[in-house]
Length: 594
Ligand code: ADP
Ligand code: MG
Image (cartoon, rainbow, N blue to C red; front, side, top):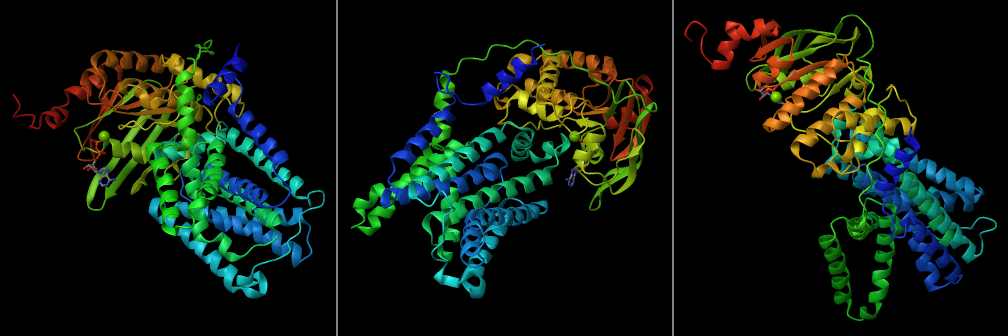
């Protein structure tokens, strides 16, 4: 077994490395340490360094919520402010210890971050942006106007530093160490189960839910973690400068944080550090222009716009792209164990029992009182003309749509009103008519998410997850492309990865929505063989397809829909001869069709 080797290879391929093999990250940490030693204890350079370091911690938070999870957060300055005021007020007004204050500040930030994240249950995109802006504005108003508690516009003065770190150099070193430590954690978060879940949510939320990820909890976690980093950054900022006031944590600062992360590159902690450093330094470099006020701002703005325009993935994204060009192709690793499919165990001989299932869209009865019984083992086909309700049926089965009425029993368990990720846990796997992969992730990462769904046979052990994902890729003959990003795959290969992702979760029932659509004839032959191999492993398949040759070759049982109603059901050969079915497909009444 070479699971350790394969894990290492997978991990290595996911991270940028400098050409001499040192993780790029180490270089940045070393640079930071040198900086801490070189920078004087007080004065101008010290202030700039302290600001950059504490800001970078908050910007790291945006790497999580925006970079990994794809959620907009325009309130990072508010979380920064929460941390700063906790450290300021806690020490000066309530006599608390610095570290206790920092803990309270990050805790408060986490709490409010989670609350903001909770709003993603109903909101996304522009609306989410508005909610975060509102939170930001409310906090600013509270800081300014709740004078008895916050001391209002005057701010908090004489904020002490903790013991052992009272001196400027040691305090800066502390901040850099915290930045380094947190940066390291964020760096590794990407390749953890949570990190993959976040990236899956960012790339395709619908597919994430269906693959077993609790989308809502993932977003709330991302917001909370991001807010904690904001709080820590703010707390250290307050200790460093000994003075805080409401204007330091305004909406404008949130925009600055966002610009920093976009400028440096949202996908990596290194980007966060680069962006923060640059955005603090550029104004300083342009200081000599300050005698002509308009010119200074114009050049500053133009520089930022140009960088973002020509490096859409930020500066680090650009640099990383250059490294990747030199990267050697990873050697194909030894094949994992053959994929084990349990077929959902040995329950009753009925896997899925659907009774009087309906889905109405307003007046349109897309699915109308459909009964469907799927026996364990074998291939069951769901066919019907375009618009007859096949995809809608699958969407109701997998929980993307709520059933208007009817019941769905999977392995004897009523799943009618469960959310998608819980149905996946209960044993449903599916693919989509329009492929839904996480396009910025590698084939292996896509399939790993399937392998690590809750309750899967490999559990939480990372090496087993990788091994199972590789085995699933090998099953669809794509193991050699495991470490490539799927966006560059052909249509046929993307379909195969999607099937592998579903297989990796070891479902009891595999739902395939038109897997043959868009494939050329040789790919269709491969698909047919693949379906037969899956079926030979004892896994039950419900397949939607238009290709009658494929359907009649692989399916033993067929259910036919027309206008949302079931018009035929039974053994393949019988159903295909059924007059109503012929009529539905040819569009003529059976007795007229001679
Ligand atoms: P099929 O997959 O059999 O081609 P669909 O299930 O996609 O058909 O669609 C069945 C009917 O439901 C169509 O008339 C379609 O326009 C309608 N429909 C599907 N999804 C929605 C939706 N989200 N909102 C409104 N109508 C929908
Ligand atoms: Mg369809």
